[in-house]
Image (tube, one colour):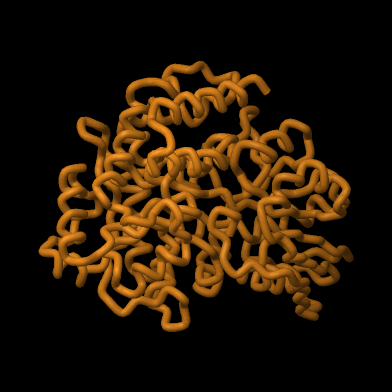
Amino acid sequence: MAALASVGVLTMLVSVGCGSNDGGSSSGGKKGSAQTATIKVVTWSWPFLPIAVEQFEKAHPGVKIEVQASVTGQQYFDNLARTLPVSGADISVLQAIPGPFKSMQEAGQLENLNSVWEDEGLADAYPPAVVESYTAPNGNHYAINVDTFFSPIIWYNKDALAKAGIQPPAERIGSQEELLSMGKALQEAGYVPIALESDNNGASWAFSVALQSSCGDEGFANLTTSWDPEVAITTSWTDACVINALDTVSLYAKNGLYGPHFATQKQAQARTLFMEGKAGMLVSGSYFDTLFPDPESDYHVKFPYGWTLYPPVPGGAPTKIHVFALDALGVNARSKNKELAKEFLALIASKEFNSQPEVQAGLPGIQPRSDVDFAPDTAPARTEITKAATGSIGAVQNLTASVPWQSSINSEVLNMLAGQTDADAVAQRFAKLNDKARAR
């Protein structure tokens, strides 16, 4: 997974050969090839990749896929516009968020993948929020999505809620008043109400949800796109709805929802509080539904749990599930093996490949195609969240995956929650960052 939520990233060289001489078709329906070539893929250490390599090499005798799983942090993406053209890589992992990804599209450094999108029906298979973020202003596509996840999801300990006299909430907490009441009851029962992953965008995710509710879907969409000078500003970062969203998150902190140490609470500390039954709730991502029941996981829990969403702000629009689909793969425009590289991405993007249980188990989040069923043993909450995102609740792009100054959001909101600044100052800071991005 990308830097926002990467786990288990190793530096290694994976080269999986099959040795088969038969042609046949890949899972993506592509015909076998008699070419001899080596395709270099630079990426994270993703468990599903060896499966793709084996299947592709079997369908393409003479072609070898060399996976260099050497990406370990954000620095790779920050430097990619400079390093990819001279790297010799045919395929690279990308972060499909504003910044280098957009500039690389404009500079012609990424190969057009419209044919892959058309052949694999991705415009219909990906959720609308994902299609929007993967479609360049010129209408072209330069990457495929590898996986998606949803955040923030509020995971709750059913035993803790019962001890505090709280009925498990619906898939969305009904009101701000209800959430504050839950927090008070959990505190009185001896729990930290919500364990917040402060170093993993916990504060910015809470703000993203409050912002979407306070400004409405149209206002939120304008705020997350108006950094582009071609987009007219209809909702300003200093508008009352933005201040209201910031005040909402401040209210949560002031009422003790996040506990006494939230400002310095690291990801591992927050998860340990929840895992050990000391926190009634944990704000994290949809991907944790696969880790909680796993006895070998660092975050294995032995209590019954459920999930819910933050409530709307008073008088605001219903909150939606926020989507992260930044993990992507694209083809180097200077690749000498463009067509084979595209075929490999077509395999990974195909419905057949994403339908395989072993592939689903090897994805950091969930398979990106909404037309693929989950394997029978998939953790049930993960399925429920995905269905809610594409159906009853709906989904929008998370703020931190939508603006080029996303790295500043969490720290600014955290400083406000810790009392080092106020909502007006944070809003002014965001407005200046937005103006700076437009000026570029």
